[in-house]
Length: 346
Image (cartoon, rainbow, N blue to C red; front, top):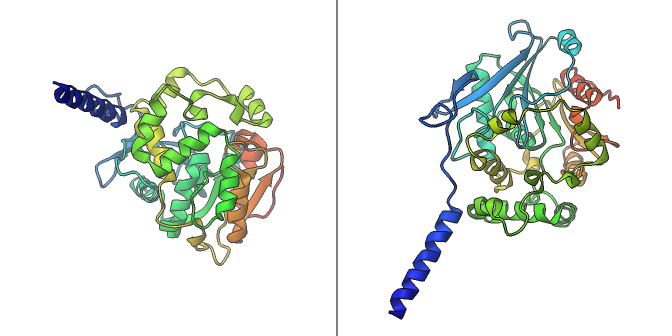
């Protein structure tokens, strides 16, 4: 009797653990019972779909073709303050898309840093925007830009990483510097990123358990924003709750959690392995970092720019994590990239 009871208890415990660790199935757009498809999409070679949005001048008439890569908990509908005057002055075609698992783009069960670059390349080819294009990645959208620089540099006319994602376990960064940068974050975020890196199989449970805080940004903790960020947030147009729900409609695991796990996995390359894609100065690569950014420690991006002197590194003294949502900053970022200039206005 005691043995049977012990077996039952152990079996029940293992069952509970299995259920807790197993991620929920995705609610794929267009599938039976899944969300509807309302946006234009392209079909990739592996059968997945990417949803996209086009803006600016037509690609046939454009002088510059620019792909925006959204960050964490965002989508192709990211609203950056780019004036119509600038778009028409420079003749810019703008393409944005939902990254895998976000919005109306199909989840990618083998999502990785590398897969992001080839998703972008296929999207560009399917829409026939030409052999070369510019990319701008914001925040978590920074690691897809690193991927483009590594795997498809021949497709790039230029690239900007804006308050870009940093990996606290990149071998190329001194351990002491990474440790110091990680320790500057809220404790709950430090632990979330450690779990994503060291035990990704546990990450779904970590993000859904209720015993202690998991990740500050998903809990709406305003402590992660600087004073300049809070001012920008006050002036942002109000986003309907339905739009936010649409971003995560296929499941938080497929969008948010896989995004973090892909970013904090062991990369196949270090950023310092990346070669200058523009040795003849025919294009440029930029990193834009706010010194008041509480989400991305500036020390790591500053270090990378020192190791890669061909990157044009810009520090915005009063800039926080949302610096790209300031109109002046946003248009300066775009002009520096597209016009390949050294000028910078604050």
